[in-house]
Amino acid sequence: MTGAETFPEINRIVADSDLDGMCAAAVLLKAYPEAEVVFGHAAILRAGMLDDVIDSKTVTVDLPFHPASGWYLDHHLTNKPNEVEEKEFTKQGGVVHWEHTPSAARLAYELFKDQFDLTHLEEIMPMVDALDSGGISRDDFLQDGPVLQLSRTLSSNDDAYMQHLLQLFTTCKELVDITNNELVSERMKAARVQRIDAVNIVQEKTEIIDRLAICRLDDSGIRSNGYLITAHVGDKADACCVVHGYSDGDLSRPDRPPLSASFYANSFIKGGQDRYDLSKLATAFDPHGGGHANACGCRIQPPGLDSNLNDWIKMWNDRENTLRIK
Image (cartoon, helix red, strand yellow):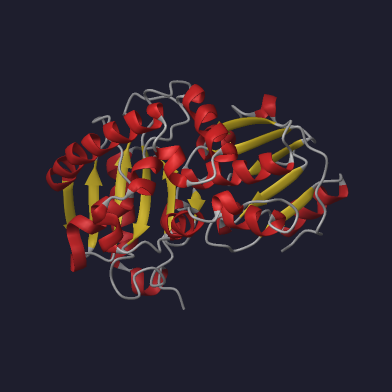
């Protein structure tokens, strides 16, 4: 870890709105039970839309580095503050905990497991790690178990539900107590139905170019992670690019976000995760893009989607020289 084993005084937790961020927030809330929890995502943080809730008594977790916070906790390589940023941050009293763990939740869990009873999270942690690091098996994904269904119910657009779920994560003793909750169960049922629809759309909207599966979900209102696309294409692709959002979208409209692209390595094939550094695609045009080498994303940049896609395909075609992980 890059920071000292020091836990500063905080009164607010700002976390990503995916399952990793939720579980990390649940760990931190155990340590700071009076803290307010705000859920967001990388794009709105980088756009400055969370600036008013981040200060020296805020911990940001599973999100890009924010210099105004007092504590930074994350595991994404492209989010890690550089030497100058970290030096200035710590000089001002900030604390950095960054480690290449499979999930931010795992990092938080390891930091606090000896101080607080976190046994209620032990059951879900392996799947959180697998989901966030590309370690889930194809069989597990196709079985679509309760953790996968639960993960698809999370959304930064529904804070009431996120806070309800966070309360369950901090009070329930077993995963089944969470998934049997009436509201959560209803959301999981809807997620199962939506996945059936998404499978059909992915089959229709995916094209494979030189072992890169490109799934165009722009202007459809449908979202999908890379697992669904790579499970569909099997061993015909080494990675996928998924386009989401709306051509007339805006970050100020959570129901109509702007165009973005996500890149995922095909973790279902042997050696698929560690073959190419896809973050080079995510950062090629968007200075705020990034994530993991095998799972990352960015916003579409001028002159537009077609131009970005064409250039990404060119980079991919030369992947053995430009993207291959040595």
